[in-house]
Length: 191
Image 1 (cartoon, rainbow, N blue to C red):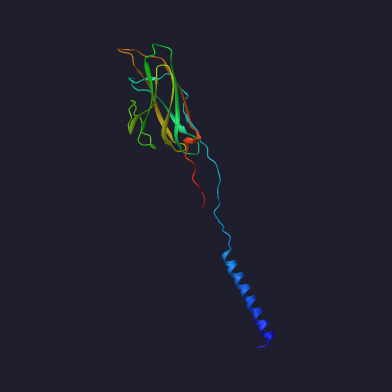
Image 2: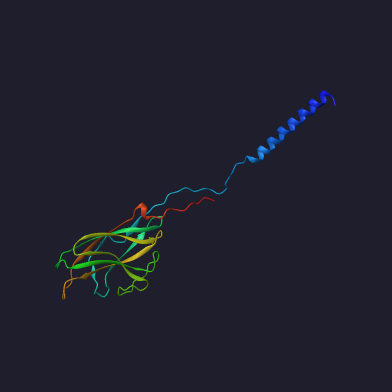
């Protein structure tokens, strides 16, 4: 073999090696794509009572055994809990009563139902908040409300006066709040 042929062969080997490295490198470099659209959005949270004042509050010995209102999640995110507040006032009699806010609870996500006489048909009667006499009070209520879910709340007063105390004219101002910490965050929609 001549010198010229050896040089030509060496050049061919180098060129082939370069092509081999280029092909190997090309197979290791790629671009990841996702054909499913990725949605980024935000949710809202708001829990509202159907009334802001119960007037009059019905006594626990009455046929209906209380007044009723609902609390509804009007947001787009599930709430884990909310804060329920009430302020009770009276214009008659002495301040010797308690005002109870109750609901029927089957589980942390399922509310029970009330009968026409104010007893908890399904689930367990659960006290949410109690005010003694004319006072203001609030409490955190741990109950999961899905968007547009509603629970029915019984508002009633119980006389703590010995003997026959008679009827009282009692009003109850209701407030419900929910904060970001009380909301379950949205799940990822990545595909």
